[in-house]
Length: 312
Ligand SMILES: Cc1ncc(COP(=O)(O)O)c(C=O)c1O
Image (cartoon, rainbow, N blue to C red; front, top):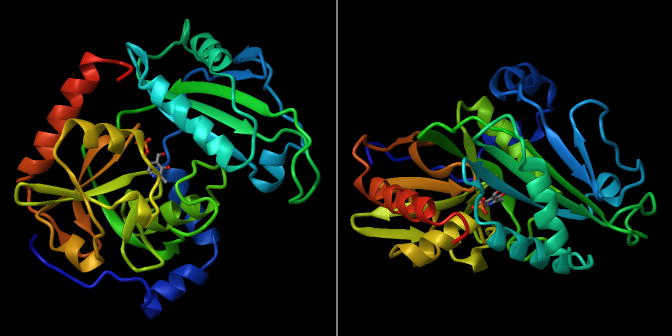
């Protein structure tokens, strides 16, 4: 670590950022978010759409009306979708947490094959979205039947390194959606857009206790010498598949981290299905040195093990 600063949530500048509207973000985001250029394959409730006419869902779908749904995002490589079994298991857990019927894994596997067969890209992203289906124009439960969507598109490789900032909003580790991969991601969208205004590629949430929780779409790890630490699930992060695999494959300790602890780390990295292991070069005003042996070791182990088994 080269410089340290208190990157905590409640400064006046943070408050300004919290209350500022979107318009100032829009031109900036238009320049930063890569648009997909290839064909996007979409499967909805048993029907495959390969480009051409845009597939549709009902305007009263409860996912659209109140965010009543769950999802998975899987990495696609030359070998197909990665870690399908674990992603489907988490989708089922998330659906149960929202009171949705268990999704049919056989149907899902067929849908995944359907959108990936004859794809015009090698590396990409596959998204499964599962909502309550048609419902009222409010919070009472959806009528169903559920809507199931599987879509795939090309996705560029993320950079090996990124900068992060502490989000000026907290994650509620006691909330009904803590640890659930719900489609209600507007908080994450807002925080990621805010990170972009700070020149960063990810925003890190603290939880209501003030401890480090997770990024908007990533889990976080801190390296102290030979020791790698990540916040426990009780701190409120999503049980990331990449995090889960790293905990099985490498020696990693789960313990609460205050922001002061985290900023004193020798190295920091973040993980997700689409970023794999991504090194952090700056957290707010704290700059991490260019030597990152701990991150490289973990990244190498992950690449080796994941490359050897597409569904670990
Ligand atoms: C909030 C959040 N935390 C962590 C992760 C990382 O999870 P995974 O490794 O399963 O992609 C994600 C992935 O999208 C996420 O949305």
